[in-house]
Amino acid sequence: MRKTREEKSGQKKRVKIHEVTAENDIRYRGPLNCQHFQLLGWLCIVAAQAAAIIALGGRLDASVGERFGGLQNVLERFADMSLPFLLIANFARILNNSEGYKIQLLKNGAAMAGIALAAVLVMYRYAVGSASYLTETREEAQQLFLFAISLSGNNYGFLCFNIFVDLFLCTLVMFFLNYRPKRFFTGKARYIFRLFALIPIAYEIASIVLKILSANKTIVLPMWVFPLLTVKPPMTFALFIALAVFVKTREWRFRRHGKTHEEYREFLKTNRNSRNFSVFLAVMLLVTSLADLVIFIGSSAIQTAVSYEDSYQSTIGEKLTKATGSETALTDEEARAMLAEQGMTEEEYNEAELQAYAMSGTRAMLAVGFGESTNLFLLAPLVLLFSYTRIPRNKQLSIYIPIAAAGLIVLVYLEGFYQGLGRLTAKYGEELIQIIDVVP
Image 1 (cartoon, rainbow, N blue to C red):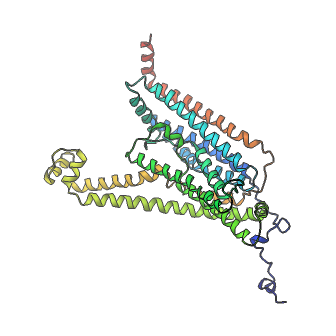
Image 2 (image 1 turned 90 degrees about the horizontal axis):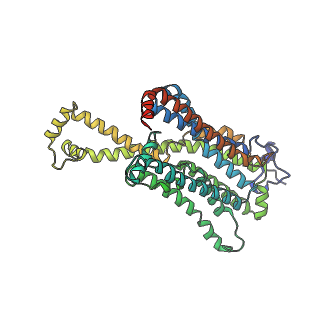
Image 3 (image 1 turned 90 degrees about the vertical axis):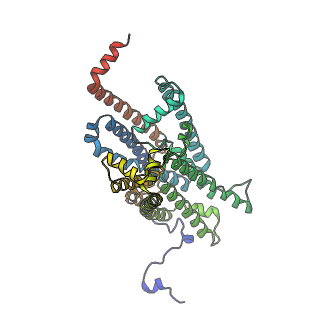
């Protein structure tokens, strides 16, 4: 009998994917499980709220920004990791089948709907309702509410905060790609069922388009749309799609050797596949970080170049006519004279215009989240210590983690309100006392 190359060299034969069983499985399992990533994800959400409070405080009092600016940057870095942590935890539960698709869809769908309804109630009933006491019309009250939001640094015309929209969409993608219908969509009709995965992808694309249009002031989004917008950056969603395709491709590679779906489900429980998944995820985190950086810089540069090229073909008179909204066209001489009155030359105006185009080019990219996934590579070491086959000792703890995080968020806002009120009192104490004295 001829010896294989591995036998001749004395190397151990590599186990192929369809040959992996519980008997020849590896012993190694990463120490981190889905519950650890869930906890880290919710702590990052708490960090995001603390960063928002500090940012608002810095706008109201410059000393806050000077004192806590470094802490704010650190907290914002952690905040960007919240959804990746939660998505990986959600993905792990799907892979180890600890919770079926129906339970995941019901939990995330109910949470998504609950937060959306609560947000609409708070925004329309309390936020806009309270602001309407200071304005003549409800439309002006909504504008005042959006202005208050812009104080925290968000001037894109929308808020996106319902992370369960993202979790629901990602679970829906996995459901359509991997679930095996028993009554409907059986046989070849199952391919139609698989195509339904395009629905959540289309929802994600529609959300991105709405954000871009709102950031560019092309449209004004109604406030009831805010809790229905996706939160995660587009590249994070692309990462999840890559993971879903990886899992589906693994199933195809496994079953093409005559294996059944039940055998594949057993294969998913092996430590070897868990390790392979973690390694692939770590590599994809690095690739996604680099791709996000390239897309952000490249797209911003292209948008800037296109906008400036259109402006470059216009004369200085045409530029100022458009900029000032003058009914009569300005000549170049009149435009230069107008700039001279403002102490500016034509070259300085063109340079300022280029900077404005550069800001406009990055505005839409920042609005939808491009550039926010560049830090994903920081998760790679943790992912290598992660194993979706490791079952948490106390499964019930997963229920209390979001509740505890919600309590921390309330404490953060209460402390922020307390500290902010103290600073406002110290800064505007005399004015407040005069106002109080006037009130009968």
